[in-house]
Image (cartoon, rainbow, N blue to C red; front, top):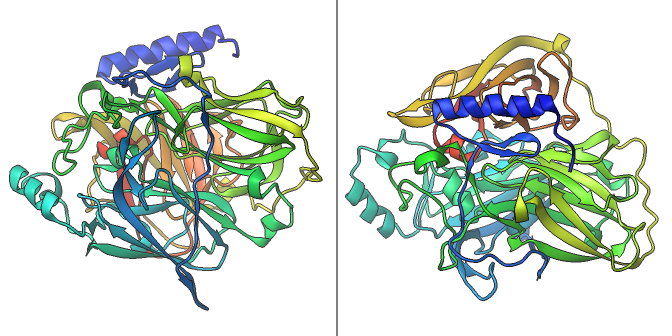
Amino acid sequence: MRDVSRRTFLGAGLLAGIGLGVGIPFSLGAGGSTSTGNLLRSRLTLPLPFTMPFRAPPVLHPVRSDAAADFYDISQSRADASILPGMKTEIWGYNGIFPGPTIVTRRGRPAVVRHTNNLPVPTVVHLHGGRTPHDSDGYPIDFIYPVDMSYMNQHMDTHGHETGMGAMVPGDTTIGQRSYRYPLDQRAATLWYHDHRMDFTGPSLWRGLAGFHLVRDDEEDTLGLPAGARELPIMITDRSFEATGNFLYPSTDPSLMATPGVTGSFVAGVLGDAMLVNGTPWPVAKIDGAKYRLRILNACNARRLDLRIDPQPDGGLTQIGTDGGLLAAPIRHEHFELAPAQRVDAIIDFAGYKPGTAVTLLNDFGEGNMSQIMRFIVGPKSRDTFTVPDRLATIEPLTAADAVTTRTFRFQSGDVNHTKGWLIDAQPFSPDNISAAVKLGTVEIWRLIADFHHPVHLHLNPFQVLSRGIGGPGAFDAGWKDTIDLRPAEEAAIAIRFEGYAGKYVFHCHNLEHEDMAMMANFITR
């Protein structure tokens, strides 16, 4: 683990004091302030790491295709999953599994995904990283109401119509089903889809509503990247468990119908004490002695990760892509920081290890078992002709000179309906308020200022990081991003080219407890 400088230590102490002063504590680790959130301890004994096999989510095939699009069906439903040995965990899953099935599509080939809501509460589906028309983007109040409304009616009768669902501004809602149309006029990238319901995104994802969506294109195909069994989707989530084996989450309203948010200090963010990879705790993957492509997604509610391979492979971790797809050129890292919702596309060369070597993916922002993510057991050296090229893709850099305007947004804690919450420019989210009106075809610079850790996600278009403070982009900011990891007391500038579709979209903190407690705002494109 890397040394902690005196400057880092003193900075962490100062920020801890600020956090205690406003009642928003956060986790501290070897790297100083690591995650804004509090640890929720499970009420049972967790399994030992590296005792269960790695598994990849199944790929979903279209139910039909025609000249215009590929069509998919997904049922959102409750199911009992085998996550902990000898126990069942009730999940909310796409097609009843956690993570949901992986959708694989090609650039320019539209996909239509029909979701049927067999859950007891309304849902919304957002294709995270998708360049999507506003009516399919998953706006937070564009609900799919349940097929069976009995649970919802019961709890609405209990809570009345002055809070929660009854107080929401009506959106573009449907009952039972909704079809989302994705034109996929965008670069190859690792996207993911998840619930995006206003005020209740955190508990919905915690229960399992997330899955991969991979976009491929000709530019990526020409590289001959590791594929098939040597392309591993890795969705990392932290979770906590009840004594019964069910997920433990501190909802203010366990019915998820009326009062949003979490109890007590968990308003800072919920950190689990079990590390899951594709829904399996601390799994083991048996691999060849060859190069592998790892598509890593931090799908935690609030936990930041600092990834490291131990022992280090030849060449370290070679980053080839990020949220918005391939980089212009590969970048080698000894470690890689990943905030909630961010992705890293990496090549790891396992050919240099002796057969039988145990190689561990570590999290240097974690303590105890949370400092470990998964393990690889290396097999015999295998035929492998792939070489990482010096150039990967063409990326047009955006500059300050391209911008037609600069806007500033402040992300900070504050009062939301007389309780602790999270605000953008001192305002809680309302579907009625518009924070920015932008013109399609133009570039803007957005200055983002944070009090604590805030992974800020922008819908519709990706962006490029121009600066942090008085310096340039950080070590993990290269390429097209859709989420930026803002550190405590930090200011960053991003450049966005707005294009594609007119309509109303949102930007928000992807610490899901912050998002649910109002750290979200609207922008419109026209």
